[in-house]
Length: 77
Ligand SMILES: [Zn+2]
Image (cartoon, rainbow, N blue to C red; front, side, top):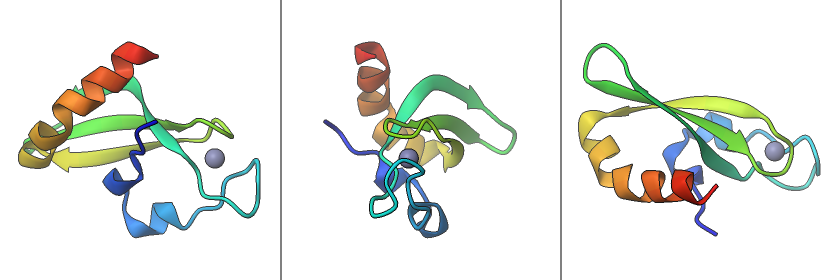
């Protein structure tokens, strides 16, 4: 299982999972990826455990770095 928590900023990582207070959310991409203005890419993530949703904005370079693994994970779902 690939963990996508490294895509998130610290403040989001500090959110406790709704399902289990002692654990952090386990994020995976939802398949919703869209380009936004300013060369950013918006990636929607969902917690596998509690179904919380969040968006991360990646600049073009960091998106390219993660693109293969994101698309692979999306295809798996
Ligand atoms: Zn969660």
